[in-house]
Image: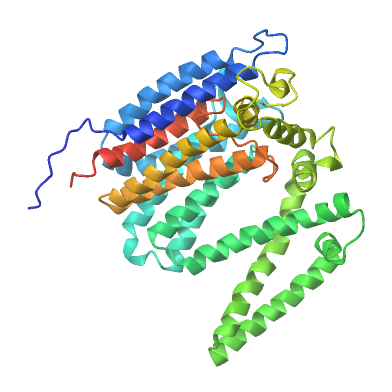
Length: 439
């Protein structure tokens, strides 16, 4: 029998705990700042609710930390089924806010199920790949995992919530990568998504930004021309398949690979353009050029970039920001919390936040390496993917490098569901760290 190494059950990763605690405090400070008006009056009490969510979230995080992570393996399927059922009923029973039904609750008390569904997907995919590590490189396993991921994506899109739906995809990619899927399969899906985005945005770019007709953009919007293009691509696809079959040359394999991506992405982009709402379309347009509609859809990006740029090296000082106190930034306690921080604390404050998130991500990947089994390592990889994507998209959104998606900055942005989700995720990471010496 293998000897179990003796380690204290109360050993926790202080790097993660301290980093999370500091980020929560910073978040509360700037949520408070976002609620102060130019006259010095406190117009919002959101910071009090954030204190409650942060406190209870820390208690939950520590509770999860001391649980054996193998319990999550056993409950992964139950978690996924429950969150899927809740997501199924959210568009019907959920509370409508700004035209979207994303919250379930009564009065001011509510939760956003799509946030917790991220954790259930992480645990379910980690269990799925850990049970199939011998066949992980097969196309069947990869497509099954992709189908599992598509379930919450489609249900969240129905709310509609494009920003949250986007998070599930990088979670899937990173777990699939470390779970043993072939890089060619992962690259194929990634290229398809990129092609889908390009073909979706191109007609809007031609219409709103160039102010002239572009031949390829017309092909993507005119149904008869698009049908002719798809027919030609299908013929090319068949010829490439025949060439690969008879000659076995790698060139035909790569042609088949690339043509199939374009053939699938063009009709998919047409469907996406049909279901996109007007405000979502304008978010794509103003991402390319916010000055197309500077007082409308482009206002958020322009004001956010102005606030970030005005912070300078050390910022204007806490509670001295103009953009937040004059309410130039909508959703400034949630989507644009980073803009307020950059304005009041400047470059030095931004660096501090980058370091804290860097510690959390670095320690997470370190714990993944220490993990004693595949499920633990993949679960930690999924949590790291969630944090990384939230960070990149939210920060990129505030500086005009990403389209506005409504994705919060975990631990900093106002919102109980996102705070709890982020802290529970860290609890899972620390549970793996805590039990790394147990067999």
